[in-house]
Image 1 (cartoon, rainbow, N blue to C red):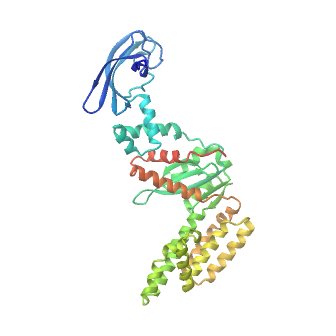
Image 2: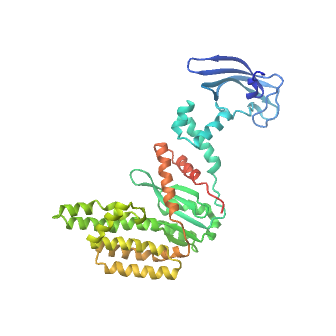
Image 3: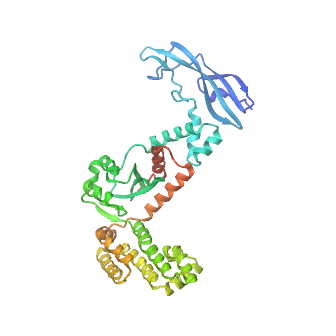
Length: 400
């Protein structure tokens, strides 16, 4: 068996010394080979004139359980074209103290592990790891390239505590995040449409929640696009504004019947969850609750009827279902439900547009869930640009 030639790992250099420290660090001293001329760091042409040299400590990939550190003489050449310039070393990025091999390994780890775990594994500072990861993400996802986009999905998410929000815009057909920006106002999303430019004319539908700011900005830049209101957000608002309100009112009306009042107070998740997602015993409890309380039964049935408007096979059928739902809501005698129905009438066109453009509401929910996972893995982000790049990387898109 032939001995391993360590110099093969660092072309152009020989290993001339090796030392080991108590901290499990293996330090290798390198010397450039006399036969290999240094190359200019700018034009990369051979340059025999050497102005000076300085020792740089460089980290390389670990060897078994040993940290590998290189004592590397880095030369400044006197290039006849470029002047005095640091030499080009192809396995080491300019001004870097990490070899390209180590950087590639760290970048692969970052696609699997949280930043803090990679820092602990490699022994490098978390800021160094983050800088590497941000540079990788910037190269892969930092350039705005919307492609042949025709349908968009827009949503806001909580960035930090204290009602600070950001907006994410996705290509609905490719499930690819195109843009993420601070804020949830018209001014906040305007840069996206400005970058989109002439492509705005090819946008045919935009799915969003009932956000007036988003609606107005879309109509200004994409007047031919149809706004489609998202079922998930409407049902969530129905749960807050109607089901929760009536549940509280019914619980207050039963203040003299404590057992019955307790049943109604504890029924929130039974009423909000879809029937098909309930376990058998929970389904029985829900049925008993609805049989005993007419107002709760009414709002629960109308919740399912409201969903059916979005699943209509045609605009005509959607209109029929919408008119029937409105009639039942008005005749219910329940003030929160009647108020919700009046407010929802303003958005009728965007609701019925779902029959023409079947925009999957699960996209928005999936984006928000993934964003929460990214935030938990990072224990929160202080660098918003880095966070937004992470979101883009989580939704790189797929071929149509």
